[in-house]
Length: 266
Image 1 (tube, rainbow, N blue to C red):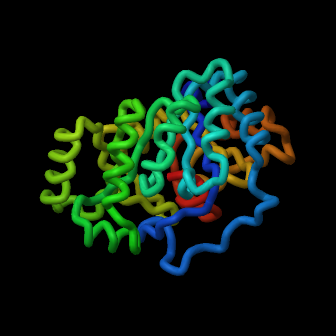
Image 2 (cartoon, rainbow, N blue to C red):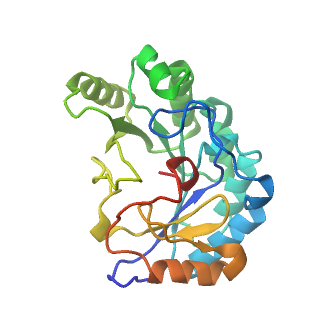
Image 3 (cartoon, rainbow, N blue to C red):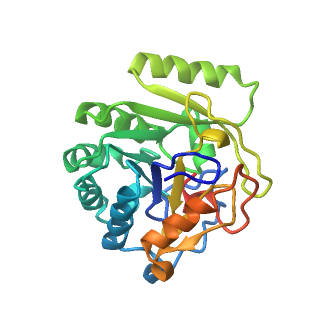
């Protein structure tokens, strides 16, 4: 699928839930959020139908996000259902890693190919502060479990709060090298003000080469993270919603006032 700016849209990011087992300072308020009604959340069958339609239109890469995707009940079965769709060449998942040691082997057997794990610091106290109570030991266990399961490559996503914090950057770089992980630095973003930049070590944030669309937990196809545009698959049908999103994909991201990272997928 080509958009108006001749970008080939081949990548679908699916936020399977707005729920999360952490409260990261850059993503959720300390008191939590007003959760979506259960009836508004897409079923597995609905998600798979969107995937099949997207693949028929040219998508070949799918990533599952959240919230935290591993808190969605039955997530392994959803991975299996999507993995069985002919035409998907890249199936991945982004997680905070807290539950990964429990699910890594099952996810691999279900057809997951690779995984990204959020890890902003190696300091246990700082990690607990950033995540408001998270245990970094569980994340490290998840990384090891993912490697043992054969989810390759394992990538780390590190949010950069202070560009001058060389100590944190260097410690993460050394950790990634020692553990044979790929590391990406993501400058802290703001949907409301439109602050974002190209991911260091990745392709996110590079508008001129953006090849992605997004599916929210409640069924909206969004052409851009930094845009209020969205088309509901329940109202329009998956094909029309996808085509409208691609047709109206903006040249560059601006701002988003009707969504949050925890329900769009970051």
